[in-house]
Image (cartoon, rainbow, N blue to C red):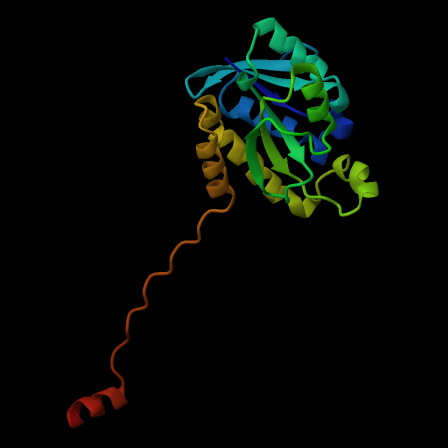
Length: 213
């Protein structure tokens, strides 16, 4: 079994915030892969499904970001999960917007949801980190994460969410390198190669040169 956690804050006020991109990704995974309708459990909205040949419980904690560990810890203890069976999708200030990275363990990089989860279950779980970029000054971080994506950013947000949902079965198969490669390819597909240009018919100068030869 896999516990797939998307981080965010509940309620329409926060729905399109940068801090809620984990929620957005899990919502698209649930839709794309035909999970069961969401229900309240473990202080979260949870949905059952499968991908990558594995049973998956998708979870969106409703505790607010800073208390996400309460919800995750409850589910981990109930199912007696090992930490490598937990994957958390969250926003990452230290990654440029549009970048996605996966890693197991490590610090919280200023994300209070990750900080709280690590306090409840330990740090050695998988994270899928979705870059939202840093506003440049520490004093602006709070407003940055709790503000909506700009309209100009929305096409890239859609690409990110679609790519994570498309590649999610690789997470189920524990192929995180394959997951990252697939996501990168979907977000930034290679440009099609231009066909070689055909030479046109010879002009008068070419014809005259041919006669001289």
